[in-house]
Length: 173
Image (tube, rainbow, N blue to C red; front, side, top):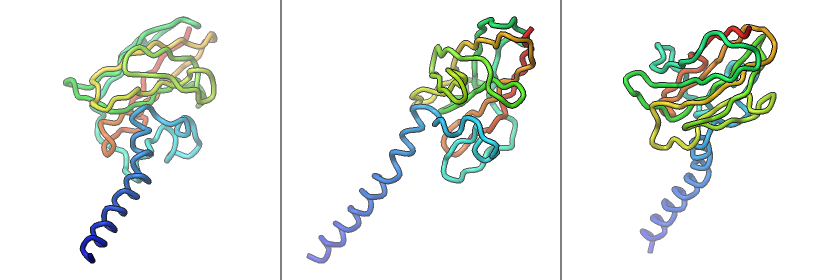
């Protein structure tokens, strides 16, 4: 009878552990949470909340391709891609001018938008349990002339990610 009690206690501890921690991990597979959108705290700003894991300092193995010049209000396409078809399991990208989000995104593949400071001003992954090697989306430039940088964080997995290492400059004319 004592053995059954010990086994029951171990099983109960395991169930409690899964119930407490699994929802947080599962929720991020569906996209980055809004609370990492824009913060004065560099430990939060576009920084995945993966339980104290540190960002990679190495060269990022992902690229963002798209135009470097656009007209105000123009919509252009971008592609996030892993070098040598390296897969990623998460990302968040945001166009910024003077530290504030500008423009709006329209998702195409493996992506969805979230509203940080404005409507659809940030794009993130969408259910990438098996990973993806590319994600495409459109970005509508703001109407006025300005210099914009699209900042991006990409996660190869929950323990390996590069924070704001994607930096694509765009001149809005």
